Image 1: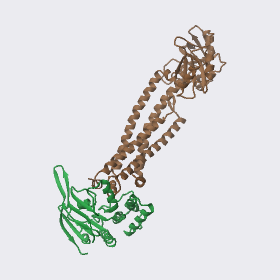
Image 2 (image 1 turned 180 degrees about the vertical axis):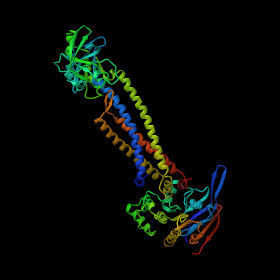
Image 3 (image 1 turned 60 degrees about the horizontal axis):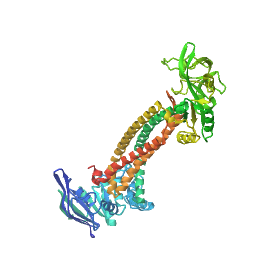
Length: 231
Length: 400
């Protein structure tokens, strides 16, 4: 394993509703190394997704700091955070979150297109990654024409097309049947092993967590256990 | 925002529009109908006002009307004046008139009437009497024993339930006219005319030369001289040209001679402005709500696009562009339908009591309506998409 690509320092996320303060995360300090496949686990409401949202710059912590690839990503402008998400990070959501008006290939190439690649370049990038996730025959289908497993693979292709430094996945198999779930986890494993893709995945499935290099357990917003595994 | 941002923005807008065809068609249909609802009624009112004015111009006033000086009854040396005015380039027509009144009698019916003395050939260039003869013929220069009678004086043209006293006459019948100086003469009806204007269709028309014979006048006089110009809006220029001829009589533009018609047309225009403004506000609100709902429904997608790193300006721009597309397409379709309606109604004008009315869509109204509707659609697209683009990504995606 390489250097620390993610580092959090005393991360805290508080939701305030009137006079009521809810601590979703408290004092989370972790390091994730480049090339690691990390599973964040915990019970429902434990704060695992909240932690992923902070790491993935989808939300801002109330306190603490996050360093990604040696960049302080908290004290930068919203414009810079957007650029960082586009260039350096990839996301896979639980409910796929594809754009229904775009075909599979368009959903994938929209981000390299936004990065100013030429048409032939971003089309090739999208075709290659869709082929890698086994969807070479579904590229021009709309999300509504794809199964849940296929949509999630498009979502993975979209997350990986820009060769991000880190891939974040928020319960990526929660809406899938067991065969599709296994496909998705195997894809993660494949990209992690073959190209050294750093992956941070939230899951509540023990079997999926066990396929990761490391499991970080979160309980009541606190770091409960950090367990390295021998895969 | 660079060229690439514009490319992504256009791509997203295009995909949204082409994939959501039903939404696109519904919004465009609402836009087009809003356009029509505002412009169609307004164009009828404008057409009605125009027709009122045109009826007065073509029946009573011409574009310019020369009248005697304030302390005079007549315009003197009127033939010479007409000749001089004709020399002004592009003047369409110049005609003298004399006004009088007489008691007309046929069988046992007597009616006091205005009598208009005209120069039949010259009159053709300044009014529509020649073209409004329903039965019989228009006067010729040589007709000294004939007259034209307005349809409003003839029983067979009375509307159902109208109890006004009228003559039961037809072409070829004779009417006796008794003038204020005691002169009495019998004339044969040569034609019955109807211009459609109530202000005009109640006259008896006789040849101009008859005035001298009836009133034993040897002077070359006229009550007024009507001048027809190539089109409206040139009155000021020609007034100056006529003044330059040394004319000292009153030169009145048609607007100043409208009297009650002017007030009526003014009221129509005010009504039109009020209903037009209300129509625009209603259309603005309708379009705003429809596009607002449409964009609000895309809140999740806006959140997803932000999450994957698409710039806020690109997302915002794509929705504004979509809204602009709704607006411009709706206005274009509305305009095409409106032009077809105008074409249809120019072939088959609306029948109104004042005569046939052709709706008029002014360039100003077209521009204001189009611009307002397009602006409404842009604003309606901008605010909800800005709100969604400004909010927290997780709230946008998961509905916080």
